[in-house]
Image (cartoon, rainbow over the protein chains, first blue to last red):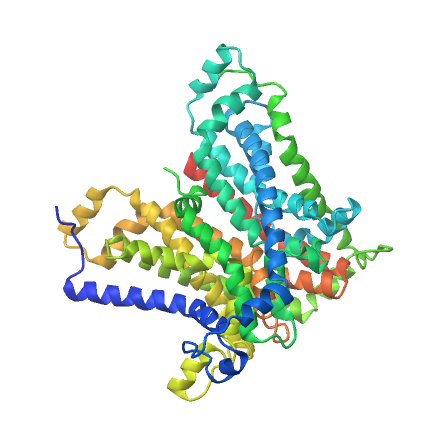
Length: 279
Length: 291
């Protein structure tokens, strides 16, 4: 059956043209970064926008080694997955408690978690910085991991809660009758069933933490410990740093998120909608 | 069935919640409380903390950068309806089964993927007077547009890019998913009635996905009040002057660059109140949908 459409042939062409222009406008800044990163500094001065006449890789070498981007990438690759693991444990435990367990403070505590989920990092930063240094965690992976997990866990918990709440309660009841305790029900029945949503919040958590700036900036103050995102933000402020080098740094920083996108597009799409569109 | 009277799961749920609650108390509740306390003190973030009553609030209401932050935030809010309508229109166009719609959807999502820091730095290069966009503009009109130098253009560039442009991909995926849930027969009825694209969008699509539209608007409010810092920090650093300041940026500036931590606490109180209102609106929206 032919799909009915409100557009005539002229309308369809107009819509296609509009969308192509929109996508082109959206890609232009990215194109600009990629091409600039391949130009020598001299060429960039006279040719800021067209394709490079001579492709050079020096900017990448400079950004990766002298600019320490390679080091920062490794740091992010260690801190972020570590934090995601802890985040999953926290969100699954709390999501299961809110979604499937019965206790007196369920609603007030759940509302509190929701209420705390949107406050900006800057509102917390001064005291978080003090606490982290009191715990001797400044400039450590643990310092960022704990602040990231706290900051992003309310949202992950909310998603896991709605997911667990939608599961049939008979699953819990049947397991109970068989004599399983709450921990066994969670680990051997609920966690395996929640795998798809766990994958989704893992990807959301990864993206959020990978791109997080304020806490990382305050907790990781030595250059050796910086994450990729902090490294990029600090590079932008460096006086006299040439655009082609900064562009190469940006392309390096874009690599992991883009790779994630190609690998996990389905989870990312699900993650966008998991938060609010339901039913 | 759920209603089982007083039958509860005992202490287990509290144990399961302990990790989350400990972290929240330590890194969110306690900081919010301490900020409020320090807003009544003179404090550099270390050393002695001197009680000065409401003096910080007095300074704040006379501080031009504070009012600039409020006005800028108001301006960004004005971009929210523009962004919402634009996103809805693009999503509705893609819904019509336009060839290649999945590719468009994926490409437009890329900025959301890369995050505000990378996008902020990218736009700081792109919008410079000698940047790529101005190379094009110069070729057409002969003279560049000072996007990041002119205060009015700088703040509007941020408003447009952050609220309208960067969220487009996110909003499209979000609205398309919501539109998928609409009963096909309603559309077919509209087409039989001879309703065109715009009439269908306004009369059928938007009313059917009202919750998604409301969530998207609340989401944008959260972005404007609570998620913009990274973008401003990397694009304009609050400047020129304080023409692109927001409450978040002001707290950073006063607290971490000038070490007026007590004073930053007063700004924090204002930001907290705004965020608390948004948070309550969001919770009510969730409640209304789930009910």
